[in-house]
Length: 313
Image (tube, rainbow, N blue to C red; front, side, top):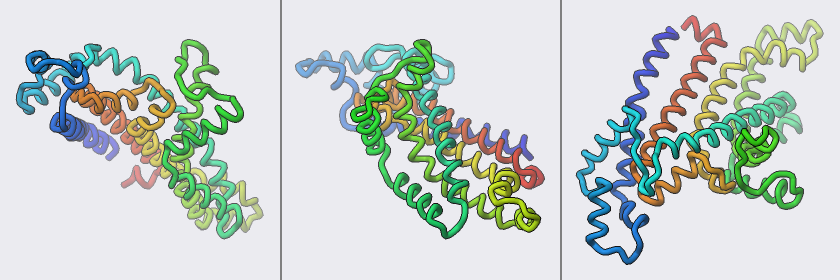
């Protein structure tokens, strides 16, 4: 059953990537203007524009451009951006930034959500209402607004973390984590709200199961029942939510990277879309689609392995 599911999901990966790339490539290619209006000067002549479009292949039909793009991507020759930079080097130099922010955001979201879930697990209490209020307030706040709020507190007022910029891991672990802490915290706060609501509900349901009631009648304290009896059956839903959060971090980091001036994939995608660079934008979206699909698949596999009922089904 598990191997069949894995094989089925892997076989759907090319179709997912094909649909994503076609949508992005079409939106940028058929939008008003192309990369020539951003690369050439304003006083460029019609002859210079035509020469650039011919050199970049922009004068060819859409089907030919898209077919060449797919062929180049899958053979590993990603070509050059409209600015003349090699796309493979450009993407590989920025991918570690997005991955580090995403993984650190995932860690922080768990660090935030788990204590709140356990503390607000009991129904109809002040703590339960406070936990729900936190989840609703944070989930309804745009991520760029959370980012600016964190900058005002931790960078402007307290001066603990830098306002913007990125420090690579090679310059030291603490400097690296300091440069990505606020952007990671922005994403973690946003996605921890869903973790709190869903994981807390799973804990509540398992606290009302016969095995938990029996442990309570035997005199076991409530927090011990939650940790020992209710946590394990609640882990599959937690893993699935973390997989969805990881996919959201990878696919939706553009706003945070723009606010904090991080040289990641998200900010590169924004700049490529603004400059109408369909080749670069399509390549980034294919890579993001692949990473998102793999993270979702990994979360689904782990959740199945954690739940014996799913393994039997």
